[in-house]
Length: 466
Ligand code: PHE
Image (cartoon, rainbow, N blue to C red; front, side, top):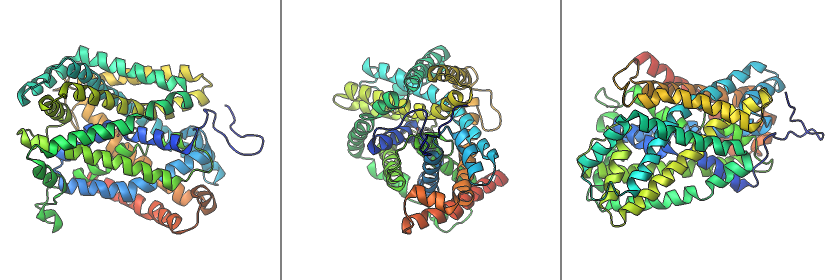
């Protein structure tokens, strides 16, 4: 194994460093902002009844997501290795045990599994770039857009082809390494995406159903305020909200830890985390606000599932002047956003293979990428050939999604906060977070008590109630 201890005793990363604080924030934002915000958030909120779900999600983001993210970054920066080696190293260094590496291993596995289906959905966005550009949606009705979607996902060969294309793009960037690959991919994507979301929001506001959308997203049913039986929010929905908070912030699986390993000493972890969480949450809210009014305006179903965004947005663009252009750009940006997230999903596994098996970065990337591609075929087939093969939570796609977002990420987050809050000594964490003031105290209370207890509470209730 390689050592990352420099002669002056300071640890450095074997994979290079971010060129600046901004580069780090951009990369983490690029990892956080992705299909989770624009594709997943609206459909999960739709399936779980809107308002009450959104509120729980927002609470999870602030009181659980934020401390987990800070813990991950500080652990990553202290260990400066891949998540498995970092957890092992710090576990020993802090006088606990090297067994903490299993938290890293679970993260590596979660990343592989998430990317296996993430790449399939990202493949859909690639196909939608071509469809948009060809004018397929110009002036199309809800019915035509719906038929386009179902005939596309029904064609497994085409879906597999798009999945292959997307995985190849991801392998290409990850193989090039930290500074050249990751940084450049992110710089323009987030601001451009934000602009297009604003354009969509403007259109949505003029649809005449903006109030409906707003109410769906933010009004909490009376029955939930009074905590009566009639409240539609089940423990399953609360778990889905928690899982979505983890998924959208890219936390609980070591992606942020791996990025933290490349973070310069002097950067403020609190500042960077706040910036990322704010950007990520705003984009998800914008996506919801743009999509739900369109859903109601066109008589669509909020609980339509994974196809929701692919059925509402082309419809909106189809009716706009310049729609072909904007729609094409939108799906290009969405594919970009997915791409920068996919990089984060692969990074822990690749860094691990490189360090553990002494491989080159290119070799590691191809091995892991090939594995993910193969597993992804299960999700490709979940929307066509194997659509009726259902067990436990549904199709293969449904199960991989449930297992990763709702179980593995929260479990990873739980262990990460316990590690940062209880196993690491106060000096180590204060050293990384750089202050002993109110902010540090707030983090410590959240990481030691609120986040772990909250996660456990939701997990236990969801498991025992279903
Ligand atoms: N946060 C990404 C998204 O919202 C998905 C992701 C999860 C990326 C975990 C990296 C790690 O699309």
